[in-house]
Image (cartoon, rainbow over all chains, first blue to last red; front, side, top):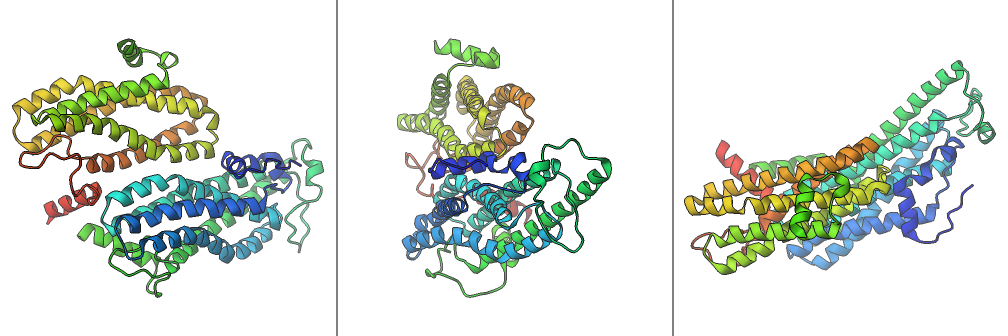
Length: 271
Length: 212
């Protein structure tokens, strides 16, 4: 087992982005050897970076208590991802285990943390672009939609990483002995059999079926994660801070994310 | 030295591309020449200097804004080892964009001298900029053909770059106006409303006004 000896956070981030944690050999063993605490720390950091970029809008537009808004945004972006994970992870784990996804609890969590970290790294790297637009744009609706677009882009890339990981998880998966009535996600013999010769065809077929099902579960989960995340973002508003409204940590609950986006679109196009 | 390097950029194969520093210098000088032609058309020397600063600034800042995400996307796609080559490709393209802009500077001067309608001029400036961008894109594809042959995922990274760069570049150009100066307006480095207007919002507004 490879242990990450380099203590620097950047090194861990580099390995996450390069996908070294999700290499075939360890995935086939049903293991992901990534340091959870460091992944979470990186997530908080990257989220804060993008949060600062979001807060720039309030700062440049001279909104009420702009500094507080910047700090609140920097705290809220990581919170958004963390809370969404907390809300959706248990159900994913149960359904993934039911489909015999060959990952144990800790490794499933690590896999998702890695995908979320990719998402956060993408939006953090778009931070400068957002900050520039925040500096040069008065339209609140435009910035809101730009933010939604950047989040969606990060989500798509995070999903790509997740999909690639599931694909390689099943690509060289050894024979899984299916015991009816159990929901064991990993096979203890997997490591020993990892170097076994090519599988006979019936097993191959079963494997493809399992692959398909597990991928469907992950895809559904990503959809649920996206919807919950969008609504969580709506709950944690304001991130940008409308220049016309006084600063509040949270807005009162009203309608939902999708109505909000529709309203912004209408505002942008209809003036 | 520099004309030779420019010649190599235009004709040469990818392996013969000049050093990144030389590419950046060529891009900056070419863009400055184009800016001087634009700003000088007003007959106001200060505007010529401002524009000669602003056009290179436009290219440099749009590139700098988009580089972090280009790096992250390349890394996620597993193309990190090719990243230096990808950046060299971008710089070569910027240099050719600069060369294209400078080469069209006489055309720009001619247009300024012969056309009075400021709207027509703005449109023609956009056309000249677009053709220079096309020239840069030719070299970018020349470089990227090799990279894509090595790994098809480079195509995805390139497309992402082009979309984001164009998106940020348009707003950057809008923010850095005026390049040409308008009769009756005070001579300024930036318009007073520079940090207020969003190019896309303005465009939407124009389109909706047209359709109404």
